[in-house]
Image (tube, rainbow, N blue to C red; front, side, top):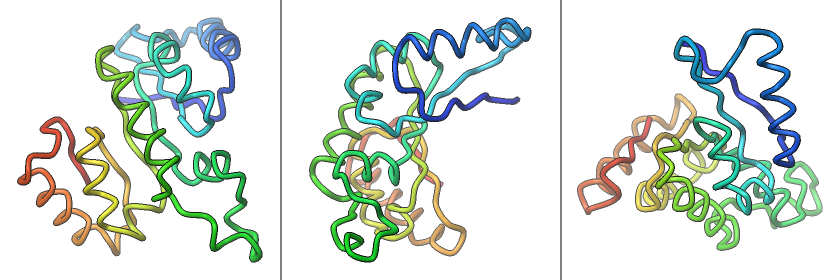
Amino acid sequence: NVVIMIPFCRTLEEADRVLEALGENDLRRGEHGLQVYMMCEIPSNVILAREFARRFDGFSIGSNDLTQLTLGVVRDSARLAKLFDERNDAVKQLIRQVIADTRPLQCKVGLCGQAPSDYPDFADFLVEAGIDSMSVNPDSFIVVKQHVQAAEARGGDQTASGG
């Protein structure tokens, strides 16, 4: 039940090289149930989501990095911190796009990042967009779970789940 997660995979060629290197070490996607996911944290991952989805079993959207690289804002910079917001329309559009583009290919998409924990209503957006899973901090789990349940009851994507 191990899933390999590939971070910061910038290009399709890089994805192919990573999969080739895994194969050289007897780790082949699909063999013995092995799944290989990639982090989706670079705008190029979203733009080429369909092509990446043909190479990987799933995506984990790294919302912190995706936000930084989309908005050109380093979240740890005191001068720019107020501009860092995963709820920005551009970031939300990218999240929605990667889910929509990969859904027909049966590719799972989750989100790891701070947004659902910091802004529990962000979970509503994720459910509506059709996210398969999201990570949250333990201290915000109950509140976020309530938001997910409410969003699903309102008719959010029935394939989404939170927690």
